[in-house]
Length: 574
Image 1 (cartoon, one colour):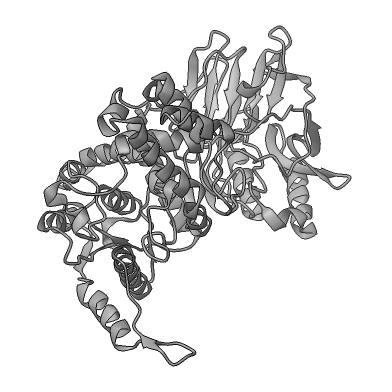
Image 2 (cartoon, rainbow, N blue to C red):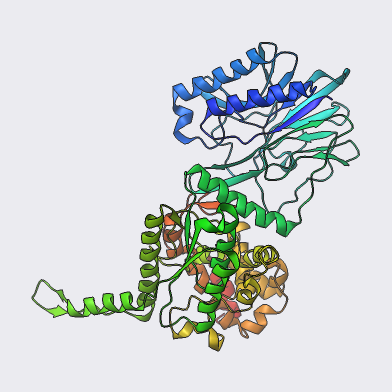
């Protein structure tokens, strides 16, 4: 055999632990007859290292680990990623170690799959072809870092016999698992690990692969597993493929499992409402931690229907989790009564009680539930979850210090239609859980009479349309003008990717459409920013997760002159 692929579970910020694991895998590969072993980028240090990149002791340990690997490698070539520091600049680099020697290899570094992931590193665009011996034959090898599909390919087809890409690739449901039209025999080595940049946690999902010069898949490592694979020029084993929905569901489970492991916690408390978001969270955490470590708490008020209360209990029974019912109405009433009995005294001696609008009373309920969840989590020595989705986060359809709170938001980078997709997968896994019944009910916060699901009422978001409108703004960097322009052109649904005819059915006039459009634009660009800034860390599953790529700042909601003129024309004002 010739090449070993080390799909390493890199632990960020732990060079000693990563190095020991690498040495163990090197010994295993050598015993299996491998001539070469390849590790992913930044194998020793991990990604997203914030202040550690300025810590001299950490930098020294990472460099020394590279020399230690070289010193202990005999009769096997080791390719691995580490960083190099020269003249106060950092370089994400490919290294080759063998028989005590450590050599830095030139590898062009393009854009990352993760926005801004290479910002801490100085640019590296040079490419070089290396003559190596593989299976006793000379082989011209080129190395890559970054997503080469976003730029001109750096090697000519007649220059190389093999390309080795050691880029860490996070899972994204909107990207193909394997890239197409590879120019030459191509080996991609990915890690399996959860690494974060503060607010966003990225799951590098494994699935390392080898495709030949005819673009035929010859070998593939397991998804969502650490592993060592031995491949030859003929290929190797091809792991079982997962469907898109299967992979989405299992990525959610792996992301939660790895997050909980990283914080040393194995118990989770979930507010179970009888809605699809909390139902999905219950499935994810049950599989990640075991149902015995999950506590579902139903917290009904007088606005919760018997149907959703029954479905909440059904989820706990179907999953086999712990379950409790903690009604909140008494606590809410006592709080309101306390305010009524203790009026505010003005500086002039005037006394009057505070008055609460309907929306404020709704928020009080959400915060009462948060109080219960936090207490329960402390009691069992666990965390409580944030179950919100990306549509809600986009427009701030959540309560400060209420349902916005939690230790981790596993679903906050999923649009509502993706929540339903994942739930369908878990329904096959947990046939006794009433996920399909829950999915058939209109989503509702059940915080007032206006949310009565028995009357078909619920959330103000029309997810079949607003999911795609908000994704257009968030992930495609469009704004309100672009949406209104395509509405005028009559192709908005096509541009958004939603069902044709939705706009006309829901908004029969231009005035109604514009009123709705501006409602959500004001929220997306207004108060929702404050909520997103304070939201919990999330599992990143898209190209633009909130809290990543660029910081958000609060300010005035912007309408361009082009938008104002177009609006006026559509409303007949010009």
